[in-house]
Image (tube, rainbow, N blue to C red; front, side, top):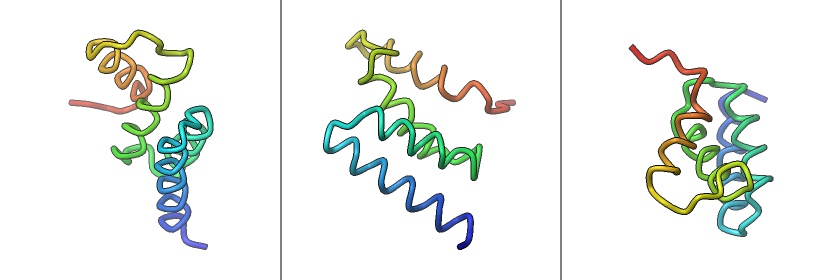
Length: 79
């Protein structure tokens, strides 16, 4: 199985988990997808969204969501 196929499946599974409010599973799926491609922005965003809805990021405001997204993307090299 090609890594890109696994990445896509994990990402899509994460989308389903978000829609089912299974945020911990969505976080795990996104985290696994990021292992295949550390710069896959959709997976990074999905992991941040999942983290926002778990106990890791529980403040319901936009600034907290941005901070949560940044904390899950800390491994990116942004120049």
